[in-house]
Amino acid sequence: MHIPGIPLEEMTPEMRRRAEAGAEIAGDMRFMQAIAAAPHMAEFYFDGFYEQVFFGGEVPIVTKELVRLRLSNLHGCAF
Image 1 (cartoon, rainbow, N blue to C red):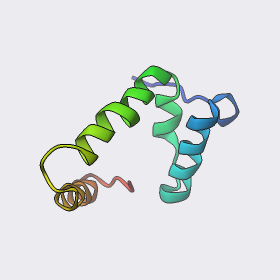
Image 2 (image 1 turned 90 degrees about the vertical axis):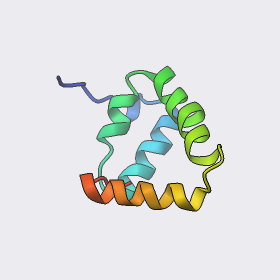
Image 3 (image 1 turned 30 degrees about the vertical axis):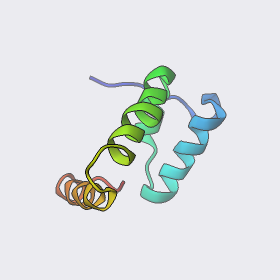
Image 4 (image 1 turned 120 degrees about the vertical axis):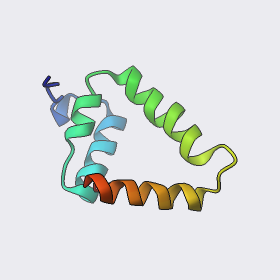
């Protein structure tokens, strides 16, 4: 299944900022172009899920970051 990417110029300013930051870090903004097709899901991902999982809870952030780095190395994600 192919999800067409939203062009940068059609994104909201916040999505554009995130996409440009992702491209600067990883050289790729396909995830942001795909998620921009459903802004309500992007909002949930960044402000709900991501914020709660990675910055909330009882597991220390350092531990979460180490796990995240290991997972990204295993599947080749630059983030």
